[in-house]
Image 1 (cartoon, rainbow, N blue to C red):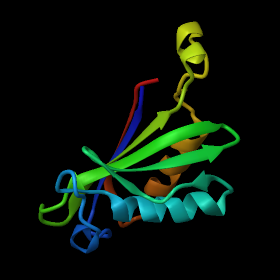
Image 2 (cartoon, rainbow, N blue to C red):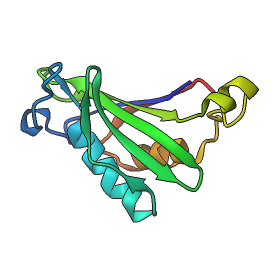
Image 3 (tube, rainbow, N blue to C red):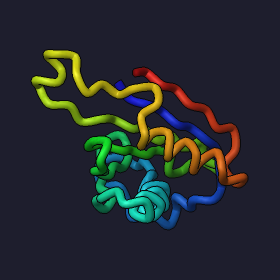
Image 4 (tube, rainbow, N blue to C red):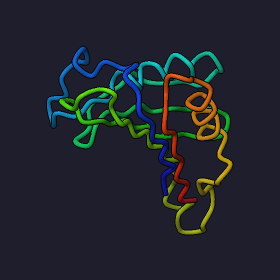
Length: 131
């Protein structure tokens, strides 16, 4: 299952993002910000790419491989409500044997949560862990 981190802010300008050719959903700006922060602490991170539900990046670190997604209504009036999802990649064997599950204290998820909570411009922060 995924961990969901939601917050409201006018910090990220959805109108300046590259259009999502699948659906009018923002998320690129949040992921570019996260990407910069993750690279600083030695995660390997891809460039944001579009999904039908928003935008995503692949993140690789010592604690595993992940898909991190972000989305908000592109045409909503700021401050926008953003949702960041953190999914841990698991092999078929991991799933069959119940291994490598996303824990409540997952290192990547906790790092992103700390980033969001540390920035006073991001308000109404909520975390949902479905470990």
